[in-house]
Length: 255
Image (cartoon, rainbow, N blue to C red; front, top):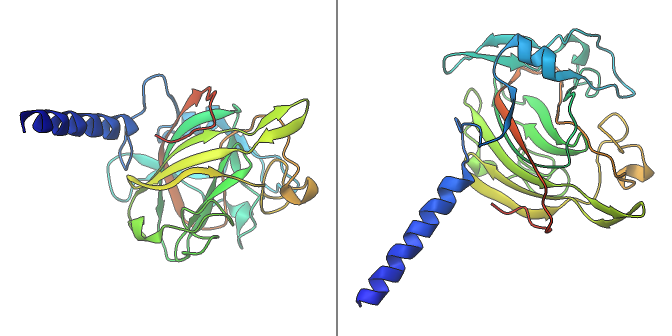
């Protein structure tokens, strides 16, 4: 009986430590050695981000996304509602980090102000994790777009902050040929929703992101890409964005 209690205690300790190491949810602080990509300031927005120069780009620098007061907490955040994206013209005013990445751990928080609000988080400027109020399909909120259904029950709703915590492993290539698909594990508001999901392609065409126009999105190339955020003419806010570069030798993103 004593041995059983000891093993139970050890199991609970390990489980608690794992949850703590996962470090997920709204308000999560940057992990050790992580780079802060957006801290609420105009200076950081201009220093680390730029418009994505895709085929539909209609905006010009400086970035027209506005720094606004956080409607829930103290501080400032950024609003994606760029004038060039009016009418849902994605690709016209999307912003992307100046730095490009392969494997990484990402934390990002978003708030959709009104029903139907639409944006998107693009890993490597290729693979969209959807930000869309009101949609629980494979094209909906927190979906690996068009590939994994939206876990809508984890959504906090409009006017509230939500968080994605993501570990991503880039596709692998040998002699220019893809040998391993990109993998992603995602927590949504602290709940694990996708585990080691293999992403098959880039969706949305050439206006969507890198390689979107290659072989219908299936022609993924061996180049890194930045973190991209989508402007769709809606009041969607972002804050507390940080990233930690990784080098995942094994095909495993679970955390």
